[in-house]
Amino acid sequence: MKKLYTPLVFFAFFCLSSCVDIEERYDFKPNGSCTVAYGFDMSRALSVLNVLISDSVRATPQFSLVKDTSMNYFYTLPDSVVKKMSAEEINTAKNSSLHIDMDLTKNKMKVNLDYLAKTPADLVYYLHHVSAFSVKVPQGEFIESKQKVVKQSGDPKDYKGELLLGGQDYYTYEITDHKFSRIINKTKFNNFLKGAGSRLAMAKAMLIDMPYKMVLKFAKPVKKIDNSKAILSADRMQVTLVTSMDEVIKNPALMNLQVDF
Image (tube, rainbow, N blue to C red; front, side, top):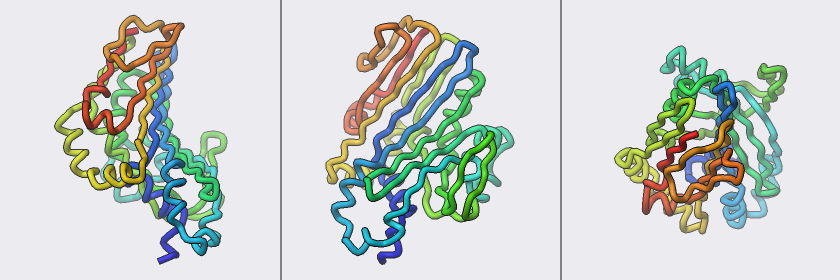
């Protein structure tokens, strides 16, 4: 069974176990475009699990593998997913990038997914469709150079792990030049909890509280915020929402946010 304890299996385990620190960032530009980034940090969960790993596993070359790679999101998708995607979905995936930074010996496991939306409508489309894509972790190593993916080793079809952004599909977004609105669908959220119940329970047993942070930077001063937990910066250009999965399970409305700017 030791051969199963490869870094990519670790990655799949943490992504699918919901044991992650999530940070969601939006950077709105004066021209109406917006950079949105999802950050998944599994380092704390890894530090807990590492206590349970035997010395023989730690001594394997796979455990010592260090990766710091970037790739075009589209090239991480398996053929089975691509075949079901529309032309617009494919274009969205091709304009997204994925970065993986891991060093198991240092309890480091981070994943970032970035996208540049050119318009508010483009951003809404992305947010409503990103959860439908599966992110596969490549066995080879990739780097991004001059806006092209350059393969260093391995084959883009050789994947061992999978990250699903399934949690994102329980939101409804409305975004314009002057408003950002996100409303949680409680029915969809409860369905998500039913499917993720065992993984959430495991995370809680491991004393992992799964914090969530959302940061929105605007090109204009914020006029109004409809969320008591959201914090407005002194210059009124940034909104920060911090909570945790435990809090959201008790009160899903904590994730609702409307900002007028």
